Amino acid sequence: MNKGWYLAGVLIVVGLIVVIALAVFLLRNSDTGYSADDTPQGVVRNYALALQKKDFRKAYTYLQENDNKPGFQSFQETFNAENKKYERASFSFGNTSITGDSASITIIIQQNYGGPFKEFSRDEESVELLRQNGSWKIHRFPDPFWGYDWYLEEYK
Image 1 (cartoon, rainbow, N blue to C red):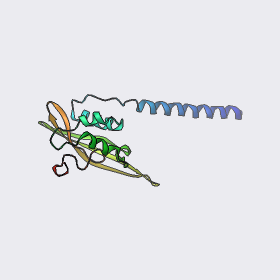
Image 2: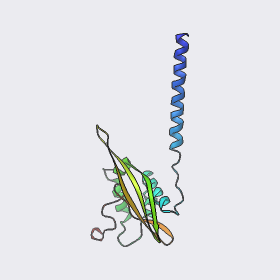
Image 3: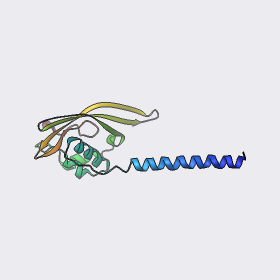
Image 4: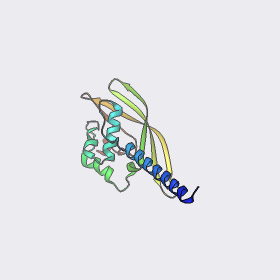
């Protein structure tokens, strides 16, 4: 076989691999629209997606309404701080438990801390939601998607 044909064949295969990888990447990232928020999982997903899109007004609407809810400015400042840990984190859903107007969702949070050794953690946490006026609202969400002082009376 001629070396020129061999090289052309290798280049064609490499080109096909690049095109396939690009297509998979674009298709995988195309699911960035909001889903229905009539379930606890939908609310949690939409909250995280709103944070990712920096749509802080929308994310704020998913928080539970009560006297100790952080003000919008405080909420937004939490995510505009220099240490944007939430941008280096993702999560996947585990089990969901709904009892009356309360729900608890287990999530597995993966965080990349960067650095030369790509430090990485994986923790199982829970998100707690309450149904208010027929809508699910987030009462507690683990770090890094939540402010440590939210809903605590002594920090109000």
